[in-house]
Image 1 (cartoon, rainbow, N blue to C red):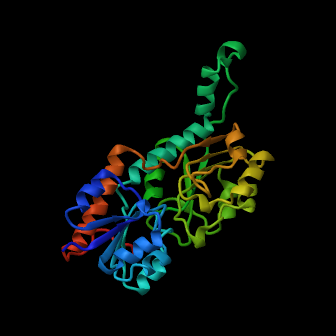
Image 2 (cartoon, one colour):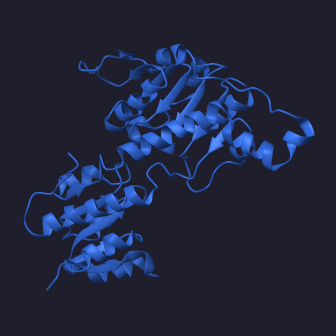
Length: 313
């Protein structure tokens, strides 16, 4: 008899097809009464499949007391209660590395689109203003600019390599200095914001990073500075960001993530100096398929009694 697996939300066909021979899949999102559904499948369920946004709460794992592994599609694990998982010896896996290049590409695209106002130029053409008003206003530049990396993990380093090709000066803020890196380290974020022209946010979400981009940091970034966020919406104090943009305390922002996704504040939507994307950092066929396959490979390894490939420590 195959062990049960609760799938929290619809995942890619590759996940469904890869796990079907290994598990009895229980689709949580289809249940009208999820508590009753979980109570019914709990006796035979030993695994959970989810993603980085929906995660796995302590409440969910508590209702499935025989669960031994959570396989998540995504690198972020802030939506998974890791403390509960560790306390109950539940293995947690995610899908790092396979999305590094894609997210880095998105980060650079968002940076360029924001500073050079590419979406605004698109609208200028489509709305006929090139004809009626002539050339659109000049934009800012990346020449002689400093990029402050907020976080410098796997993805941050890949972004930095791309940014170096644009001749950006790179500095970074992390809790601890990385002695193998050639870039200047700032132990205090507000000081880096003061010296940087652009802040690139690529830190994990969760309680320890919530609203680390706050009013003092934005004030330090200054009226010619830009904020790019490809991390988690929770990292930025959205109300403080809106206020800073409205008051001209920073020049603009490029945002792929938001505090209450998929709901984006109307104030941000109306601003012409903000570029918005619907959390698409890794959203290509190539990379999402690779992420899906890693979910399958992790759960398959556990099912066969082998070490999982990418455990969350």
